[in-house]
Image (cartoon, rainbow, N blue to C red; front, side):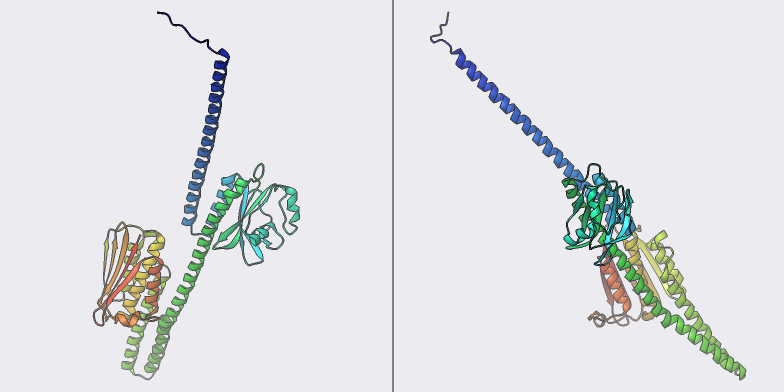
Length: 415
């Protein structure tokens, strides 16, 4: 069977249609390729930002784990160079409103001065405006007449260190091959904000530690005056009185004075032993909280004639900062027992879990009236110190006591 085509095929028209289809296919291929390229670029940018964010997170955690300012500044300078490929860096902190001091420097070239004024310097301009300064032309450095620039300095990026809306200093990075870009400014601005938080955190921590040391010294000085100095003065009086009685031939009186002298001297020795132990618990950092409390009970309470019991459940080491505060809390409680409770027995109980640690100090002494010490401004320095240290740990403390019924202090800290 044969087929016949009733109308002739329009070959030119068909070719035109085919050409149009081919052109449309080419356009779509090009659009798909462009879209794929754009997606690849977006994916690459997203991956780079994620890696950058993870890097910032690691740096911030590392910074906040350090407690010494010099260590924090060293990390800041090293990471600042590594993030954008600079060869040198420095941290300048405000010492007052007029001067910036170079606190740390790393790499090459190094800053050639120890401090520079806020007025008339590029770093000072960063402080005054709160905005980064970027210089990729060495001839621009000559404008800062007050600053002695290194001869091999070719590029500078200075960024403000912002904390709570204020500026505490400047982070400098120098000499990146090809100069610093807009992207470098963006990356380093984020990093500088994190660095500023870590620097200020460490400075405040060191300041708090200095205040705590000063307060502890003042407290020990008061105790030294109130206890040991008074004991030594009494020893002198009894010795003089015994000498006068001996010269008068009053042997019975001499014996009484010597007995008082011996008792007073022993009390002074106990007070001095307590003060020395408070100055430096030798085993706390080396062996931990449990060993330090055992040593304290043996060195002080046992020798003072108190019956002691020490119980531990789930023993494990804690961060040294937590162990230090718990040790001083226990020490304050034991000092109160020894000085005020008139107790014959004291128990210290430490209970460790995966999520918390609890300290109990229990005595069978005279106790006290809880409402009378809960009023604002009431309670001795030891009670206030326990409350302050517990708050610093983010924990809670409770007392159970009544006149004639002893006292239980419980401190619980969530880890």
